[in-house]
Length: 125
Image 1 (spheres, one colour):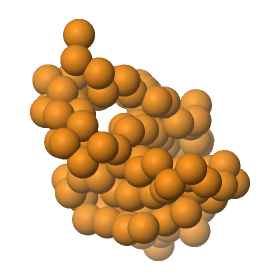
Image 2 (cartoon, helix red, strand yellow):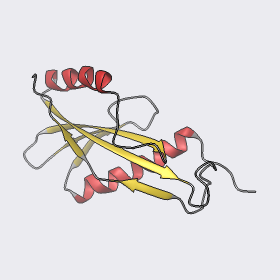
Image 3 (cartoon, helix red, strand yellow):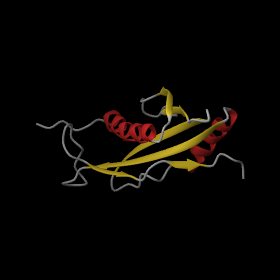
Protein backbone atom coordinates (compact mmCIF):
# COMPACT_ATOMS: atom_id res chain seq x y z
CA UNK A 1 0.00 0.00 0.00
CA UNK A 2 1.33 3.41 -0.95
CA UNK A 3 1.91 5.97 1.78
CA UNK A 4 0.58 9.53 1.23
CA UNK A 5 3.11 12.28 1.89
CA UNK A 6 2.57 14.36 5.03
CA UNK A 7 2.44 18.17 4.84
CA UNK A 8 6.03 18.26 6.14
CA UNK A 9 7.18 15.77 3.48
CA UNK A 10 5.44 17.81 0.75
CA UNK A 11 7.22 20.92 2.04
CA UNK A 12 10.58 19.07 2.01
CA UNK A 13 9.94 17.93 -1.57
CA UNK A 14 9.30 21.54 -2.63
CA UNK A 15 12.42 22.69 -0.77
CA UNK A 16 14.53 20.11 -2.62
CA UNK A 17 13.43 21.53 -5.98
CA UNK A 18 14.05 25.12 -4.91
CA UNK A 19 17.40 24.28 -3.28
CA UNK A 20 18.66 22.72 -6.51
CA UNK A 21 17.54 25.83 -8.42
CA UNK A 22 19.33 28.15 -5.97
CA UNK A 23 22.48 26.05 -6.18
CA UNK A 24 22.38 26.11 -10.00
CA UNK A 25 22.11 29.92 -9.84
CA UNK A 26 25.30 30.11 -7.79
CA UNK A 27 23.90 30.94 -4.36
CA UNK A 28 25.79 29.86 -1.27
CA UNK A 29 23.67 28.55 1.61
CA UNK A 30 24.16 30.17 5.00
CA UNK A 31 21.19 28.53 6.76
CA UNK A 32 18.41 26.09 5.88
CA UNK A 33 15.20 25.70 7.87
CA UNK A 34 12.87 23.00 6.64
CA UNK A 35 10.26 23.24 9.41
CA UNK A 36 6.77 24.13 8.23
CA UNK A 37 5.71 27.74 8.88
CA UNK A 38 9.26 28.80 9.84
CA UNK A 39 10.59 31.55 7.61
CA UNK A 40 12.82 31.97 5.75
CA UNK A 41 13.53 28.44 4.55
CA UNK A 42 16.87 29.42 3.02
CA UNK A 43 19.30 32.19 3.89
CA UNK A 44 21.78 32.56 1.01
CA UNK A 45 24.41 34.91 -0.29
CA UNK A 46 25.39 35.63 -3.86
CA UNK A 47 28.88 36.25 -5.25
CA UNK A 48 28.61 39.92 -4.17
CA UNK A 49 27.92 38.86 -0.55
CA UNK A 50 24.30 40.14 -0.77
CA UNK A 51 22.01 38.25 1.63
CA UNK A 52 18.77 36.70 0.38
CA UNK A 53 15.88 35.33 2.43
CA UNK A 54 14.06 32.66 0.43
CA UNK A 55 10.45 31.75 1.16
CA UNK A 56 9.33 28.35 -0.16
CA UNK A 57 5.62 27.60 -0.30
CA UNK A 58 4.27 24.21 -1.35
CA UNK A 59 0.63 24.02 -2.48
CA UNK A 60 -1.52 21.20 -3.77
CA UNK A 61 -2.55 21.66 -7.39
CA UNK A 62 -4.81 23.09 -8.77
CA UNK A 63 -4.08 25.88 -6.21
CA UNK A 64 -1.80 28.53 -7.69
CA UNK A 65 1.73 28.26 -6.22
CA UNK A 66 2.51 31.85 -7.23
CA UNK A 67 -0.05 33.33 -4.83
CA UNK A 68 0.99 34.26 -1.30
CA UNK A 69 -0.36 36.18 1.68
CA UNK A 70 0.45 39.77 0.72
CA UNK A 71 -0.17 41.20 4.21
CA UNK A 72 2.11 38.64 5.89
CA UNK A 73 4.74 39.16 3.17
CA UNK A 74 4.86 42.91 3.90
CA UNK A 75 5.83 42.19 7.52
CA UNK A 76 8.45 39.72 6.31
CA UNK A 77 9.86 42.29 3.85
CA UNK A 78 10.20 44.72 6.77
CA UNK A 79 12.28 42.10 8.61
CA UNK A 80 14.46 41.63 5.48
CA UNK A 81 15.03 45.39 5.15
CA UNK A 82 16.20 45.51 8.78
CA UNK A 83 18.75 42.78 7.98
CA UNK A 84 19.77 44.33 4.63
CA UNK A 85 18.54 41.22 2.81
CA UNK A 86 16.54 40.73 -0.36
CA UNK A 87 13.46 38.51 -0.47
CA UNK A 88 12.97 35.68 -2.94
CA UNK A 89 9.72 33.73 -3.22
CA UNK A 90 9.44 30.23 -4.66
CA UNK A 91 5.98 28.73 -4.99
CA UNK A 92 5.83 25.03 -5.79
CA UNK A 93 2.66 23.26 -6.88
CA UNK A 94 2.49 19.50 -6.37
CA UNK A 95 -0.22 17.10 -7.44
CA UNK A 96 -1.23 13.55 -8.15
CA UNK A 97 -1.03 12.90 -11.92
CA UNK A 98 -3.99 10.50 -11.90
CA UNK A 99 -6.53 12.47 -9.88
CA UNK A 100 -6.28 15.98 -8.41
CA UNK A 101 -8.34 14.86 -5.40
CA UNK A 102 -5.90 12.04 -4.57
CA UNK A 103 -2.85 12.56 -2.34
CA UNK A 104 0.74 12.47 -3.51
CA UNK A 105 2.36 9.18 -2.57
CA UNK A 106 5.88 8.35 -1.40
CA UNK A 107 8.14 7.08 -4.22
CA UNK A 108 5.50 7.63 -6.92
CA UNK A 109 5.29 10.11 -9.80
CA UNK A 110 3.82 13.54 -9.10
CA UNK A 111 2.96 16.70 -10.98
CA UNK A 112 5.21 19.71 -10.45
CA UNK A 113 4.43 23.34 -11.23
CA UNK A 114 7.42 25.53 -10.50
CA UNK A 115 7.88 28.84 -12.31
CA UNK A 116 11.21 29.65 -10.70
CA UNK A 117 12.21 32.18 -8.12
CA UNK A 118 10.51 35.56 -7.88
CA UNK A 119 12.37 38.60 -6.57
CA UNK A 120 10.07 40.57 -4.28
CA UNK A 121 10.83 44.25 -3.92
CA UNK A 122 11.45 45.22 -0.31
CA UNK A 123 11.43 48.98 -0.92
CA UNK A 124 8.71 50.99 0.77
CA UNK A 125 6.11 52.42 -1.62
